[in-house]
Image (cartoon, rainbow, N blue to C red; front, top):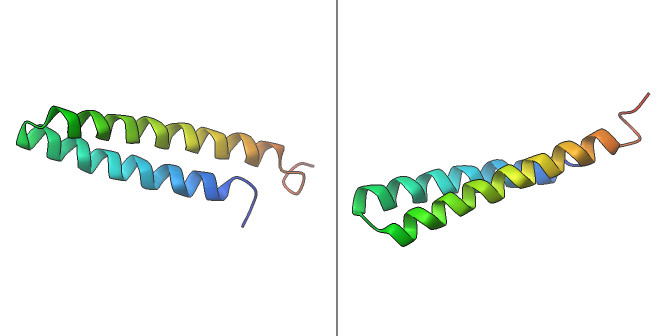
Length: 63
């Protein structure tokens, strides 16, 4: 697996988990769950960006 791919995969997982929590919190009126979902989505986006940066710095991909 290329450098940064693990972070990107974790990021996508956290974003998906966050969307589910956010929707569940919205449907049930549970503000805490909705906020937790928002934080998970943000954490996922940051991990995705981290993976992009690692991938850009990967010497195997640079020519």
